[in-house]
Amino acid sequence: MARSNFKFYESEYPYFLTCSVVDGIDLFSDPRICEIILKAFMHLQSKLNVKIYGFVIMHNHLHLVAESINLSEDIRKFKSFTAREIVRYLESANRIVFLKRLKRGKRNHKIESTYQIWEEGSYPKQVNSFKKMESFIDYIHFNPVKAGFVNLPEHWRYSSALNYLGKDGLIPITLFSG
Image 1 (cartoon, one colour):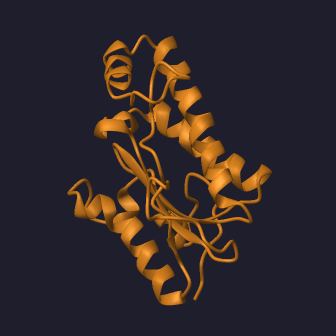
Image 2 (cartoon, rainbow, N blue to C red):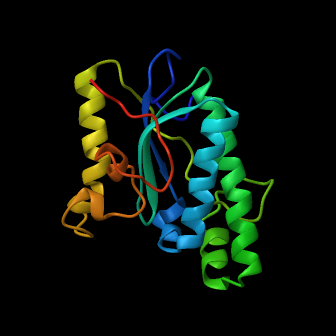
């Protein structure tokens, strides 16, 4: 039985995705953890041929619009890799409070690990029109504004908003142009 009504249906479309940290833990308030996420995004693009059209990393979740032949599997690999790297970093930096929270947040059926970083699923929403793409990219970029962290999307460091202003963002992305 499926755990979610959200599924990847057709591979010829991009998808809007949300990946959340277990129990809303604010892991991404640590810039080193954001760097792990950004490096993993670059790996997705360069090694797995994933197109990333937009992203934002908030304190306890991230959004992206991405496309690939097997996006479900690519996102699974992304989450698995980043979870291992984040735990490795937290252990080496002796971040005990985060580790305790991640251990406490681990679901009972997750028996292969001590900690759980990501909530299950990524809630894919198919992007099958230019209007939807524009809407999702705007939503992503305005997420930190709506949360009250910044006044303008381009002021949020961990986002692709600068890329869409023709400036160098933290990582290269595939720009959507309708």
